[in-house]
Length: 320
Ligand SMILES: Cc1cc2nc3c(=O)[nH]c(=O)nc-3n(C[C@H](O)[C@H](O)[C@H](O)COP(=O)(O)OP(=O)(O)OC[C@H]3O[C@@H](n4cnc5c(N)ncnc54)[C@H](O)[C@@H]3O)c2cc1C
Image (cartoon, rainbow, N blue to C red; front, side, top):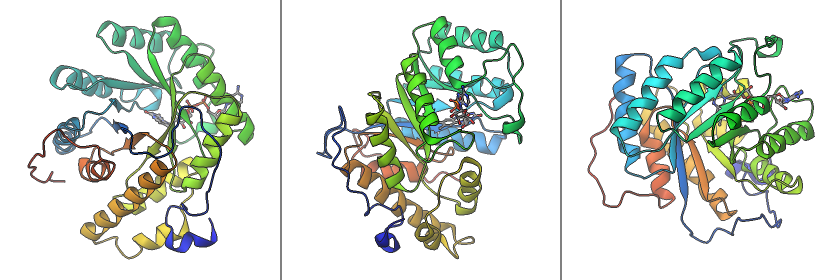
C-alpha cells in the first residue's frame, strides 16, 4: 500500500509504470473485451439466478463465458449441464474449466475429447486444489501433477484455445515468485493462449506482475480477474484462501455494512469501477469477471467500461 492509499481503496495511485508492454496500447479508449465466469448452481433458486444472469450478461457480447469445475471432478455433471445449456440456448462461446487433481489422466482427456466433439473450442486448464488439504495431496501415478502437464495433455487432444491461471500475488504453494512466474511461462510455452489472473484488489500488484511477465519474455495476454464485491465477508474468506491482499482502505469502505445490502452494492460498484478504470488507464483492454453468478455489479462495471448492449434494454431486478 502506498501513502496515498487512504483515498485509494485499490492501491492505485502509487503505481507509475513507464514500462512499454508489448501489444498493449496506453488507455486510449480502444475496444474493451470482457469474459465472465459462472459456477454450477446447487439448488433451483440459484439456478434461476444463474440463468437470469447469463441472459443479462449475454447482451454485452463477451468474448466467452467460463464455467468452473470442482477439484476431484466433484461438479463434473453440473458443470457439463451448464456448459451444454449455454451452448444450446445462447449465442455465447463457452469455456469449461477442467481441473486435474484427484482425477485420472484418461478421465480428464476423455472429458476434453467429449467437449471437442460437441463443438467446444475453449478450455480453462487448472490443477485445482484438493478439498481442504491441497498441500498434502499426493498425486496418484495416473494423474497430471501440475497445470503444465494438464496443458500438454489437452494440447495432445485437439487444438483448443486454452487459458491458464496466473497469480499477481504469487500462488500460496509456490517455492518462490520467480518459480511461479517460470511455471506460468512454461504453461504458455506449452500451448496456452492467455493467462487469467487470480482476483486482486491492489492494482499495483497486477501492474508489477505484468511488467515481470514482459521481463520474463511472456507475450501472451495476462487478463486481470476482477471480483466485484457484493458480500465483503465472503470475499475476505476467498482472499485468505488464495493469498489475495485486502488493502485496509478497502476494508474500511465496507465496514459496518454487513446488514446493509443496498449500500454494500453501491460501494461494491464504485470500488470495482475505480479498479477497472485505473487498469484501463494502464493499457488493460481485456477483463475477466468473477461474477459469482450475479449480473448486476458486473453489468454496471462493464457499462462504465463502455461495454454495452447494442440497444439499451429494460430489466427487472434479479431476485436473490
Ligand atoms: C482464473 C482461475 C480459475 C480457476 N478456476 C478453478 C476451478 O474451476 N476449479 C478449481 O478447483 N480451482 C480453480 N482455480 C484455482 C486453481 O485450481 C488453484 O489456484 C490451484 O491451486 C492451482 O492451479 P494451477 O493450474 O495454477 O496450478 P499449477 O500451475 O500447477 O501451479 C500450482 C502451484 O504449483 C507450483 N508448481 C508448478 N509446477 C511445479 C513444479 N514442477 N514443482 C514445484 N512447484 C510447482 C506453482 O508455482 C504453483 O504454486 C482457478 C484459479 C484461477 C486463477
